[in-house]
Image (cartoon, rainbow, N blue to C red; front, side):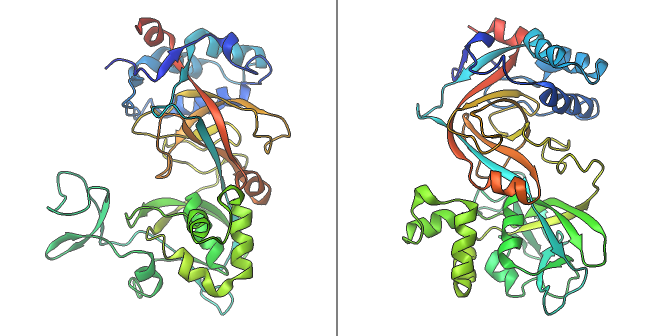
Length: 367
């Protein structure tokens, strides 16, 4: 496999803000991936960044803990070369934001807490080309096992109206359908239980249908101008139109199931697709079919100032993915956990230049 032509090898001096960035937190995030891959390697992405080319960098990262700021910067400059990503459609790159919500929840259904978060049902099975029935939508990665074979799983409307009732799948109960929906979107949450416990849930599986975001739906029907769509504006619209929540949300047929997860370090986010805890402000979700988890990305998004009031120019580590993250220059920035992180993540939708840090041996061999 050779490097895709979307990469243009550059120099660290070409990265706006590289010298001003503190890469220490990115190094610690990279080091967590280095520890994980000792037991299970990451899959190489289709753009040609081979997982095996990270071996030297991963070995070195395992040996050095808590480097100085200068040491972290030197580490990345020693083992990598930056490569600007030229999007396939020649348009600009795009970053959005995501976070881990924190909400109040009940272990039991009550009059107030009546919206469930569900665990994975027993009849939900993984689907791929080895067991996909003829005629089934090739997009579907999950299906319902029946005596006659796999069929498309129940969608959001069917589940919310009782298709899975009586199976004891409820992990916890929330007060708000809107809160539950945004937890589905984010794929994880911290739950402040009414009995005093603190719990974390994270993604386990989904019903499989394509995601349809409420922001685009509301823009398409003329309720919110597309350039004004944020998590905050969507929530405000639902607060003004509580009788239309089901109408809008059920147009997103995809439904997410969860599992319990530990909170080992409250400063870190949930364990995501790359099987390491996410680092606020330093982990990025990418298209996992194209990119290789663990790849460092320098993101130059000068119009994005929501994180710290300054133009966003940071080194990030690819440690998650998402069904809406499609393309070589497309990323979702992890903002952290809780309300403040949500206020940041909810407004992020900015053009950005993407620079992948390519292992030197691979980059220097590129034509």
